[in-house]
Length: 283
Length: 316
Image: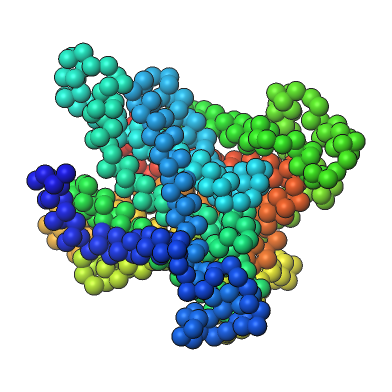
């Protein structure tokens, strides 16, 4: 694990500004979600109409909402939803997308052509549009939103994997492996996949950020997480009708989304630079 | 060139057909009877059967797909179950709002992105560059519907410069109509502008490293002259491609932003159709938007080859 190459990578990583800032913000998001599993300052679901729209105080750091819930606690609990959506949808994208991309790259010919054309068909739809259509058809809710978002990251991973894998298949050591009698499947698992893993991880962080944004959008439209599950997108949706009465309700959840997405984007950028220093020099 | 165009046109048609199949199937093979979905779970079976007959759901799926396709090709969209009017009539009213909104957003995002992108590239690794890149990173991370709320809060609630929502209608005059589209356009343009600014900066930096730019500078052309005469013309090629792809995102973005600003455009039509379970409207509007996206990509591909002769016909 701590071989020379990895230590060298870590040394470069701790000096990389984007990686460190993005990584810290992402860790904050994960920490928040983890802590909220066991503890939040107040119950994020329990309503207390007597203290509706309370201003920020030591007791309620960000004040309370229209149901008297502590906004800070709801935001903390909402991070769980964002993390779960990111994890599930990116996993769906990776499992299916990478497999399909590897299949296209290994088989080539009409299989590759067919898979790439199918990806093109999916690219014809702006992701959020088809996610909305799917969720509307299969029903609202967190799980369906995760599946819908995941489905639309499949072509992203498929294309990326196929492109990266094709480059690996052209290498001489692959030719040597084939001459040594290794099968296509074994070469894919032993040589191709490990060599394209870094590219996939970089894309995964970016897709994670996009998934958080997409889920927030679906929840904002009432198609994602349903009450009483705390969700940043739904908090913003509920804040719309309160904008004259308590404008801060529309500010805090947005900041939470922006920090999470910004963190993941910076982390993705940092990873990309670290994985491919040639790109860093170009940027 | 004609072979290239033919090839591209063929891909365009195949992608359109694929997209239509995907739209049709996603609403057909998913669990649940569309008639039941429309009428709700409490509707009596007799009503569901009658609606199935009315919608032609008793016929084989393949027949219905080709019928739908033939209708689309002849411009005869379906009939909305909720409004009981042809979907085309609904679209006609709303596209006149959604399209200008998307174009206004595109213009805003291109204007801001080009200025910022070129400025950042010309100040590479200096404070100006770092600030622009930081701002663009922030712009990419902000959800457009949140920005829309913030704009309403600031410009409509606090300053009272704009209305907090709605569309006055083109008959009330061009200026007033544009005024009601300005805030939605800014909220849509910010994210797209941020992405485009980064691409513009990268493309300009990339081109600045080319040998012909160095030659132009060595021959005595000023830095500014080289930038305008040689760098920008070449750097715009990849930027145009991204612009095309972004227009698709802008169209999709209108769905949410129109909802926030209560603008009666195509996006709002889809959302209303979804909540009314009006599958005919959902299907027809989705395929229309998808067709627009495919068409824009096709035009961008062709433009790309026209602008950069090195790419045609074999490489594109």
